[in-house]
Length: 234
Length: 288
Image (cartoon, rainbow over all chains, first blue to last red; front, side, top):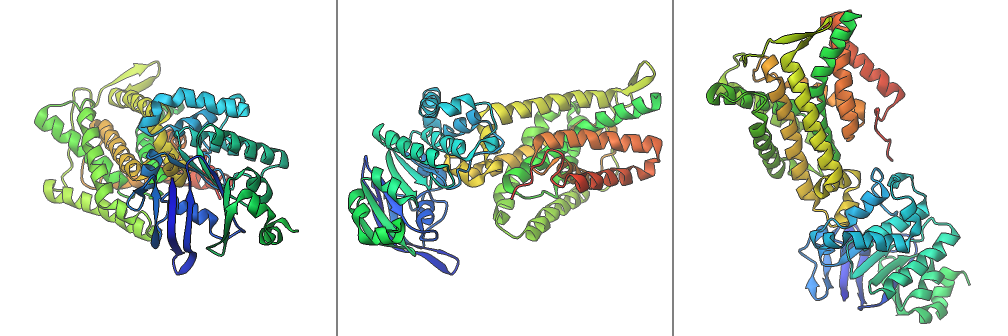
């Protein structure tokens, strides 16, 4: 479904991605693991076309994303729930969700998708009139995911959804991601929470200083000595 | 008391036009983070457009906004696409130079084409007024205020209730997040500049029956709009609306009670005082 090949990327003179190759198949949950600065978020930004790679190709369902703008990628059914949630702070919960169905093809499904978001996150229904900026971190994360689902995505990129959340929320978020995947959306997840994310993943990649150093199924990597040493502190 | 009410009313009425000018500036700033220092010159273009529609086409200046808004919307949109868009990621001083330059070109082109003669639009109601108890109400100012309020209401409806309006707000609040939701932010920048230019010009049309029209008439409005926008909170439409009326009223009261020569001074002192205690403006949020 998503194919990244030999991706290089630099911020000015500083090269941060070195020949990244990875793929996501229809129906999977794929996780990209790595420490801060390993290049996980940058990889997702390249896929969403917020930045342009210096080399390499990204294809989605066989179509080259090289010439597209960010908003056109969304129209193809590829959405990103960005790091730090990036809720519109001065819009209500409901308005934030509505923004998720801005592209024309999704507007007929708006009401149904709002109800879907409220079913997945009953808390959002309670807070629908509240401004996005006044929600707690966990609620903002729910809203960010709900807003992303409004675009009818076939592939959802999630950038550190568990970052800064309370342990209770973290567990909840991973359950939700699994549920969304079951409902038919393919997931590419970027995480630092190794244990929780590998448990729900079909496959995973490990990034170190901008390179893919390991890949395998979730179970394989959970048992891998390098992963244990580097991330699980064992 | 009569003097107070009289000047308060006059101030609020003219403040409506200030608000419209300020709202245009704040929308442009919100979406692109660029301060349009040519904004007052767009007001001037609106005044001239109404002047010629009135003298050549016999169109009433208040009716002329139906033509002036789309005309200047288009002008603003083209300006964004051809020039302003090129400095979106440039240094702030380069952006300032560009918009100041645009303003100079606009006013000097008008001077070249139509000389610097003062022109007036004399409608049947230009100097009309009626009495409300002790207070005299200027007919053209009242009419312009009512139309301003209607235009502002339509604008609020557009920004709050339509998908495109929401997308403009979303772009102003978080440009990247808006793109990730499928918003074409380049299109929103063009749209925002068009709307901002259109609003400034409409304000120009609305005050044209009560002002002298000449090529340099716009410049004081640039500064005024800037003060209004900073006062209300950069990027806040509500802030600019309130700020405009507040500045109008302050000016008028200062003119009546202190001296009409010092009214600008009072406005800037008030401006500095508010910024001293509320640095992000009345409706602004300090963002990190």
